[in-house]
Image (cartoon, rainbow, N blue to C red; front, side, top):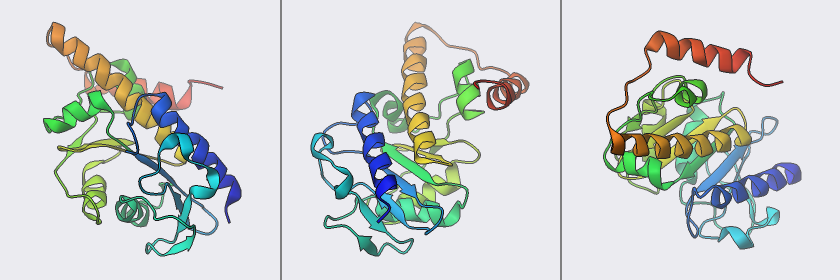
Length: 213
């Protein structure tokens, strides 16, 4: 079932350790199939180097396993909560990438100190409150805190990103860590100035309507 989506998800999972966003078995990517509404997600506790497309677990939006021999990620309930409340979202990523998670540990959003933040996120990267792992609570905080951004930090925890596709959500996760690292370095040197909101809007508009092919 959903063979092509499983294959894509397997390849996208490999981007997480490649971009230093996860360690050991932490983190996960999920994708929602627009035709069936089923969600494909990483199995719990499987190391990335042994992960294969056939290990991916297919669940419905209520969390029932439709296909798969392994237990789905411990974050599955939160992913499903987001999908149920955000019909525009078809991909979700969770990481504990170190620089972004350092901001999350302090409960601090990442202000728009860089044009890259304006381009990719259209405003500050918000930070939601603390929630325990295992149920829907994290998903609820994500939905309540993320706003129009494709990314949100979770206090004392890590990063969630969303997108119209799983690839877009992975790209957002890579970019969160990239800008968090640069901002952290800048803060060691001094206090950066935020880009004015009107310029942020212009940068975001250019990036979404003119950049690329």
